[in-house]
Figure (cartoon, rainbow, N blue to C red):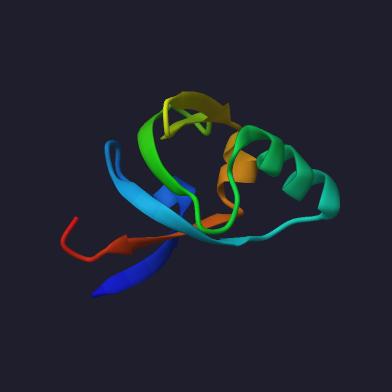
Length: 81
């Protein structure tokens, strides 16, 4: 079974598949340039304290994404993970 959550809600070292990006064209273009697009598999490395950036890994690239943007990235994860 799978369920959908925002990147903020993922736990550290959890992997998920991007299923939705909520935002305008500028944000979508920025995410696309970072390799974050619908269908991409990403792993949350960690999240900084107090609404700091979220660090994710996509293939061999490590990216820091601001908290506001991370809330708009919806991922699908397996319920057991």
